[in-house]
Image 1 (tube, rainbow, N blue to C red):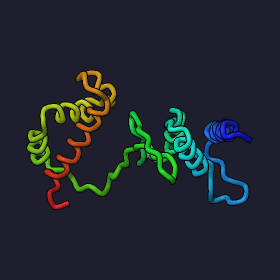
Image 2: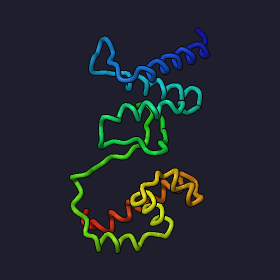
Image 3: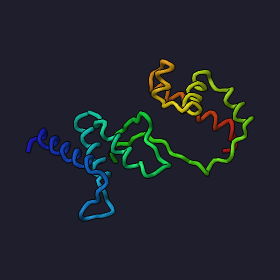
Image 4: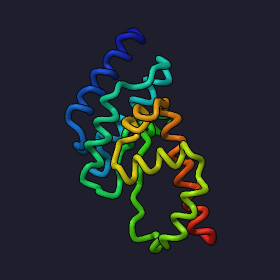
Length: 163
């Protein structure tokens, strides 16, 4: 079998795994299709230099839908390593955060840069997705995501200085 045929065969197997997600493997029920799909993705990226198709993000979104504490990011980014493909996601930490003092929040909000504050408020208070915020402000999505992350980190640092 040629290298091209082998890569085509792996892509076909990956399509099958993505079309029928979350089935367990015959010989080891503890392993499932996600682990194998991730390994195939990582290998294909390594061999071809191309990031896997967007259906990986859709598969990850579907896989984590039953878990309300985990959400695949609005515009997920992927990173490949020897373990597979990593997809950006949000993790809800609900009960782990103490109540926020309103005056501390408003004070911390006032210290953010104007763009970081605007991105944060449009996303959190107005409920816009980060791509919608980026479009409204005329910013690249990556920059909008970076501003949002900066706002979250800075707000946390100022509101919970002992953490």
